[in-house]
Length: 119
Length: 321
Ligand SMILES: [Zn+2]
Ligand SMILES: [Zn+2]
Image 1 (cartoon, each protein chain N blue to C red):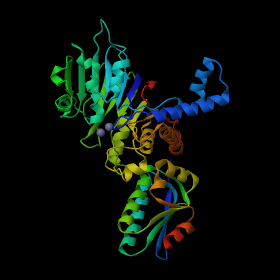
Image 2 (tube, each protein chain N blue to C red):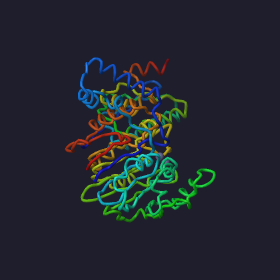
Image 3 (cartoon, each protein chain N blue to C red):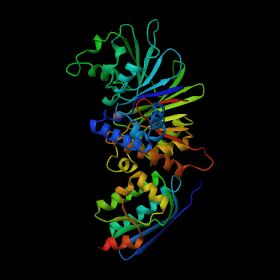
Image 4 (tube, rainbow over the protein chains, first blue to last red):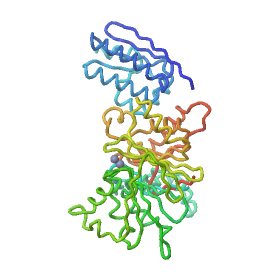
């Protein structure tokens, strides 16, 4: 299965919104992690938090989930927030099977996540 | 070849309580009442076909012990956790008058849960019985001797009446035992552990327990895929959820169902078997994990590949290859 992934990074106020589109798996996870960590470093050096908009993610493998954990740990250690929003049904299943739904802050929509950051 | 599981629980044995059994009986009766069963045959069919495994059975509580039956007169066992007591009680089909089998043991590592059954392995006490303990750790013999010494156990190792031999294996070389080719692979675990690949007549069994996997290391993952390649059954340490394995329990030396499925699919494994079950997981939790693992295998199945068979080992399970 050849995998494609594009990752859009945008700044909304003090929140960095990362929007991957495609599959985060064996083939794409390394690039995804690199983009994620660039964003995280900027946040830690500057200010703000990170929200991942997962509306466009069709599938995530264990390697992709591991990137999320690495990112979440970095930001938590710097007392910043790391939120994920808008899981597609299949990714939601993978979150449940992996028990990532118990260790990562997941929100139904991007708006919900943004609201959670200010409240 | 045939694989028989005598102990499948990870880290420490975990038996059912009276309350657990009562819960199973209650659920079975509730379901049975609705069916109005009359004959004994109906009852058997109901148990076998209607009741869930978590109600009608149990994954069991003995620690690691797996028998690889390659035919022939001798035995092959992977690890001698508490399950080996069951093997010595019910599994000695090749022993008896006029028979002289060799008990070949392959030790993944000498953590307690993998050797603690040996003091209750009856053949070790029988004069003339031949026990050959294979392993890749220099501390192999010392660990067995320490377990059988004061103040740990009343019978000293040197008082065991069988003939016990320790055989140091080189993991870089193939070995031949009972007509089976055996290869070992070093695994990521405190103090190291070793997986074993058994091959005979084109059939392959891989026993890979007590191993953590560094997903970020391409070389490590490639080595594992090579070691698991085309296995008819992969017996895999899936003790934790992926979330636990990469967060709270990182570096605790165990893997997850999801990583196992991905490795198995890349390696072209036919049957993926969850093993070294977390003692905290009761039968319902285990059944849920099996269902979820099957679903994940569906979701992650690469194009143009055959479906991966997924099961969770239970004490008493037999798999014919
Ligand atoms: Zn163990
Ligand atoms: Zn261990």
